[in-house]
Each structure stands twice: as C-alpha cells, then as structure tokens.
Image 1 (cartoon, one colour):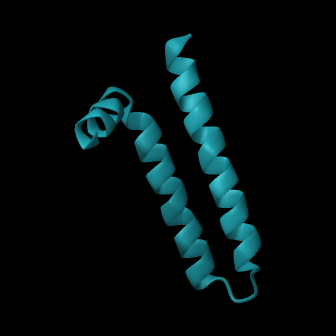
Image 2: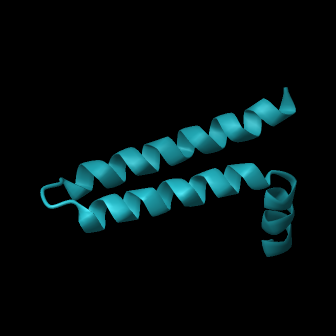
Amino acid sequence: MLDKFLNFYSKYPWVGIVIVVHWLATAFMIIYSENIDVTTVLGVAFFSTIVFAYFGFKITKA
C-alpha cells in the first residue's frame, strides 16, 4: 500500500511540494504570530490542503 502511495506522488510531485510548503508556512505563522486563533488557522489549512489536492490531481487528468 505504501508503494502505491509513493508511486502516486512520484507522478504528481508538484502537488506534494505545494502541500508541504503550505503546511510549513502554516507552522511558521502559528509559531511566530503573537495573537492568533490556532483552531481557525489549522481548520483553514486543512480545508485548503483538500482544495490543493483536489485541483492539483484533477487538473493533470484534464
């Protein structure tokens, strides 16, 4: 099963890169911001990860 997962991301590396960079930016924003609602930030990050993955994989099939 892990082989299928790694093979999937080897076909679409830019989607994985965008998601990783997005989560790194979210982590830096949470760490270095003084007044921030962490629940909202993580909720938006999770939702946008789903959107990035959906459009990233759907555009390549079109």
